[in-house]
Amino acid sequence: MNLIRAEVERLGARRFVRLMVVLLVLAFGVTAATTLASSHQPTAVELTEAQRQAAADRRSMELEHGRCLARDRGDVPRTADDFTYLPDDCSQLDPALRDRLPVTADYLTGVFTFTRQAEPLLYFLVAFLMLFGFLVGASYIGADLNSGGVVNLLLWRPRRLTVLGAKVGTLLGAVLGLSLIASAAYLVTFWVIAQVAGYPGPTNAAFWASLGAIWGRGLVLVLLVTAAGFAIATIGRHTSAALGAVAAYLVLWELGGRIVLQILEVARPDQLMLASYVGAWLAGEITFWDSTPCAGYGYCNGNYTLTWGPALAVLLLLTAGLTAAAFALFRRRDLI
Image (cartoon, rainbow, N blue to C red; front, side, top):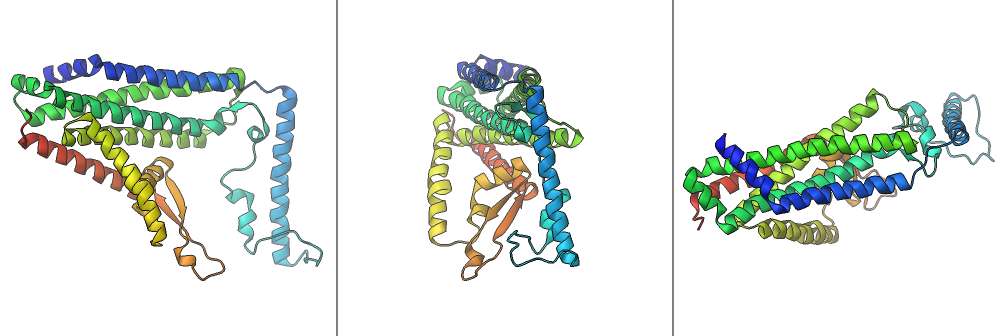
């Protein structure tokens, strides 16, 4: 416990960590202020008109689906001057099978609607927390290795793996605690904005469950990125090693490699990109388009999907591999 307490104090005393917390609060404040300034509480007239338009669009969708079903039954034969497109499969028009139906919030302009914008705002929060975790994790161990702080700590507790384990455990616990507090404050702030200067929108158990799932996956991703930043900096013995490794990967593979794969017409190139698995894990699933199987055909379906299961497996294996390599190198190499 003394080692954990010492690491908590060391982490909290770092000026870079304090600076990142200030920037985190500043970014959230700017986002909230911008949202508040650009929104207004809808009037009764605006709400009534938006409800009317949403109901009319839902009714139009039902009528279109009914026409398609009537065509299949032969009740309403299609005339030569009827240019309305109806698909062969009427399920494509079934309102019950749509991801979402038109709602009042879709027709409110200049109004912050919590149910419409909570997910994008949560993605922004997760992205910023990922950046926060990576930079803090890399600088936390990188600065200690570069300045000799780890050597001084080992003189007090001469067990390398215990010391490194305490550091990474303290780091992950601190980032998780901060993420929980930031998430709660963030979502409550925008919920209040929607109540006083916007429109909350229809909320139900499905909405909160979906938002909670994104939030939970986001926290896992923040912890994985934090651990990866810590591990890379441990392997490279410097904070800049982690930053350089990420920059090199993005430029050489995510950008350059993608261009080369497209030139070579490699099938499903997005499956070879780490960003695809990050997106699939965070969103639950993500669909990509591959034109390779469609070569020479007038029409074909080149869509393929990455789901959260394989994405999590890839992210866990990568993080575990980096962490294991960091512990193995830290155990054996000279720290001076």
